[in-house]
Length: 279
Ligand SMILES: Cc1cc2nc3c(=O)[nH]c(=O)nc-3n(C[C@H](O)[C@H](O)[C@H](O)COP(=O)(O)OP(=O)(O)OC[C@H]3O[C@@H](n4cnc5c(N)ncnc54)[C@H](O)[C@@H]3O)c2cc1C
Image (cartoon, rainbow, N blue to C red; front, side):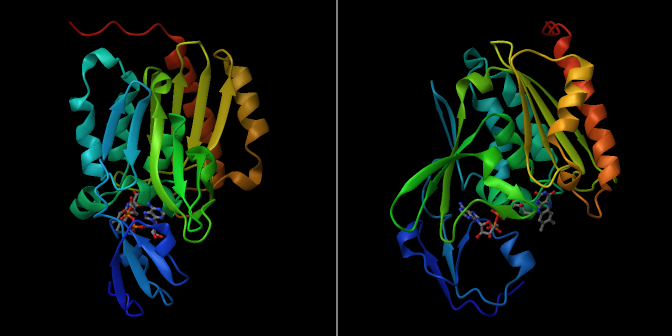
């Protein structure tokens, strides 16, 4: 779609160049789908030259401009001795996109998070792994915010006007955790109506991240794996009726029911001994 109000494309990733009427442009798959009646300039960050994925002993840094295709290819490139078994989540999360060839190859991890869709699979992935967003502001300062707190509602984020998401840091401890993934859509190729990720850390801690079913990510944290009743009670305590998402991709009642059910499946999977590797 043409955005006929736009008169300038500026190649920059400098937030101090941002002014009202500007939008950061990454893959453009949302910007050009939704259109706009007031945007005047697009600030294109795709030429910033940020390394898409950087591995270190501290963990993984994902540049905001990393594409879905680059992320999907990444698990094969990580040396096995890192023992980052949580990278098992990368491909199911990427596959949770209703992705055309274009969305797969040009849309970005940062663009997905900044769009703030409840079903955003990159929000789900990075929130579930305790990813922390590095944000640069137009006043020259920077701040860090957990991804789970960056998306605050349906297509709403905690970004102030002009703030730029630079990267997401995923800690090595979360990458070493055992994980379990469940995703449901009402139709075979539909957008996620429920997407849950469970994480069992090396210290025995359990984290359940609920996305798509709720308007924003919801995380439950336990010092040890709870029993079924404990998990159900915590889910019902934490997610009040107003948080269940309601759109064409699922009724709130269905999302609530399936969250309870898939949460229990995840809990039971992670409670069972880890399957031996296939020889
Ligand atoms: C056919 C189709 C299917 C889709 N299916 C899904 C789906 O299943 N699930 C889903 O979640 N989405 C889906 N989308 C929406 C979209 O493609 C994705 O959310 C995608 O990841 C957005 O990334 P992008 O780089 O194209 O974002 P852009 O369109 O470039 O940007 C999206 C928004 O984020 C802002 N932004 C981008 N990068 C940054 C940054 N680094 N810092 C601050 N702000 C930034 C932009 O200003 C804009 O407001 C679909 C879109 C299409 C067209």
